[in-house]
Image 1 (cartoon, one colour):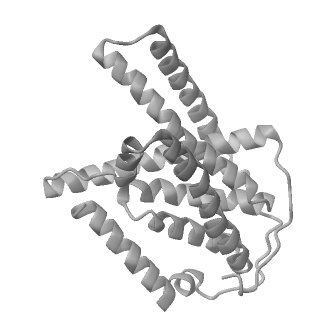
Image 2 (cartoon, rainbow, N blue to C red):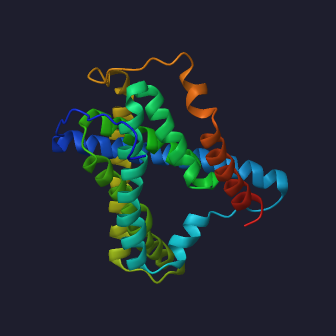
Length: 245
């Protein structure tokens, strides 16, 4: 991919308020996508009369917290953003912001290889691509991605531990306070995230100019041998994780 011609995006720094709003939007999209994924897997599970495993959640729950911190929360987000945003967007932005966002979101969602993650990875991938186009700085999507993964793979383990203590009656005042604060923060984040999404129509990428107009951008982007191989392989992974794993 590095051999392909790429565009240099105009750099634009974010203030802390906008970054926090972007985090709230990201978290809200993750929750929405996760709910869709749970609903779809529940329907399929009912149809095949079998529970569908969530491989990433099983990995998080069974791994050491330091492993979750290093691999899932830091190394993973850095490389995923460099590949699915930096490398990909830089080389497809010339065909238009919309097709570049759709490509980034779709490839990122499929890469996870399971239905539980596909939907929220698709939504987050599209939003991270938007943030990268808006700012021209890959550090912002990386920080957003790291923040979300920290909440899902590290902080969630402490929440589960406190919740287990509550259900077993072996809790302390710290467990109660920790869960209450966590839930309150989640509610506030969701409120600001939903507000941010309602303002999305105003979020124009006016500085992004299409340099190459495609007659049928979706078909050009997705109906080719390379994409057929990628999509076919990732769909096989999804089928395996859904019906066999």
